[in-house]
Amino acid sequence: MLAAEPLIVARLEAKLAALNPVPRVFTAPDLAGVAEEQQVTPAVYVVYGGPRIGQVLAEGAIVELDEVWHTVVVVRNLRAVRSGEAAREDASAILQVVFGALSGWKPSADLRKLRPINPPRAGYSKGYGYYPLSWTIKQQMRGEP
Image (cartoon, rainbow, N blue to C red):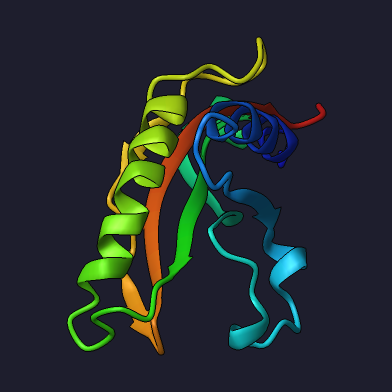
């Protein structure tokens, strides 16, 4: 479990490098304790959303897990703060790259392809826009006999 995080980060860093400005890629610990107005933008945060139990076989000895991962695009644009329109425009190109980089991508031989799932709602605050995309990766786990 959790093996996908550094692979997702590396994939996003490589794909986002073509944008100008280049969004930074962070993980949840990078965000801990950072005040909103001190955030680096544009950015993409990779956040573990936890496992979901899928199929259970052999009386629980084999379990298929769906690991949930969130990628949150964060931008800041103070034009049109009330409507959030400028922030949405800034986020659009980044969201397209993130979706293209991860949807259907197979991070390693031990993990299956990432599949998009319904994300949490977008958020807006003081010119910041938060735009999540969410993913699931199936992984089989085996208990010891």
